[in-house]
Amino acid sequence: MIRLVLLGGPGSGKGTQADILKQKYQLVKLSTGDLLRKETEKNTDLGKEARSYMDKGELVPDAVMIGILRKITAGFESKGQGYILDGFPRTVPQAEALLKMLEKQDVELSMALLIDVPEEELVRRLTSRWTCRECSATVSFPDGKPEDAKCPKCGGELYQREDDKEATILKRLNVYKENTAPLIGFFRERGLLERVDGNAVPGTVSERIQDLFEKKGIK
Ligand code: AMP
View 1 (spheres, rainbow, N blue to C red):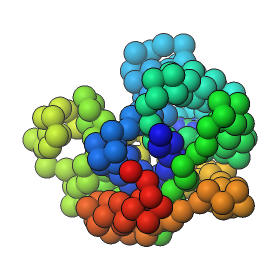
View 2 (view 1 turned 180 degrees about the horizontal axis):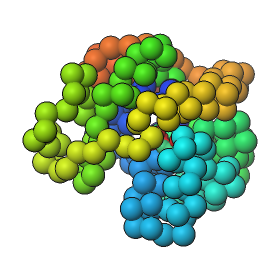
View 3 (view 1 turned 135 degrees about the horizontal axis):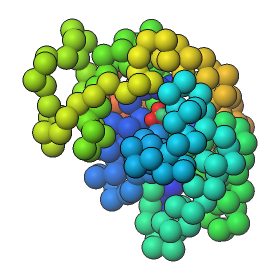
View 4 (view 1 turned 90 degrees about the horizontal axis):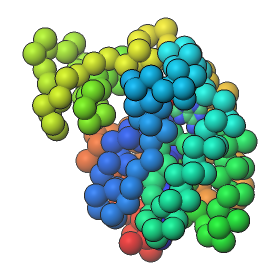
């Protein structure tokens, strides 16, 4: 069973690659960002709490996130369903909690895959990114969004995430460097880190990932 963590800065293509991988390897994707956005739209207690952090580009507290993850992955494990974590872990305490949880379940993480993209490219991508309100797909409009543009996947309405606006993007990149980038060393020390060059179009990055999977014997 595949248990995969995707690492990379905001805008590195984790969500897009997770969508490709989930089709190819029959996995489910758990995107903690998508999950929290759905909760904020429904205005649940969790959503209300999360929004105050998300709109500012800050991280939701570890205890909240770890609780969510534990509940959902236990469900995957009981069904023998392989999964991809997109956006979790975001901090070293979250990573420690994840490995501890897997150890308790007597299972192992397949790998933590870093999608490596230079910072200037992340900023360029995020400022031109629009998100589908229906299916969460993202679309890039480097020259501005045409007024009547709709989601190419489902025809849904496109919107710009509150945290994809310029001031918040800089904050998120700083949060990434401070809290999330240390995870690269964390997983490397444990022999779990793999890296792909993510500075290319999605199809090319996806081929690189599939080559890596083949090399590692992941099917
Ligand atoms: P994302 O869609 O992955 O870019 O996540 C959007 C926002 O959701 C982040 O900027 C955080 O505020 C929050 N978030 C998502 N995943 C986590 C996590 N694992 N830990 C803390 N906050 C998170």
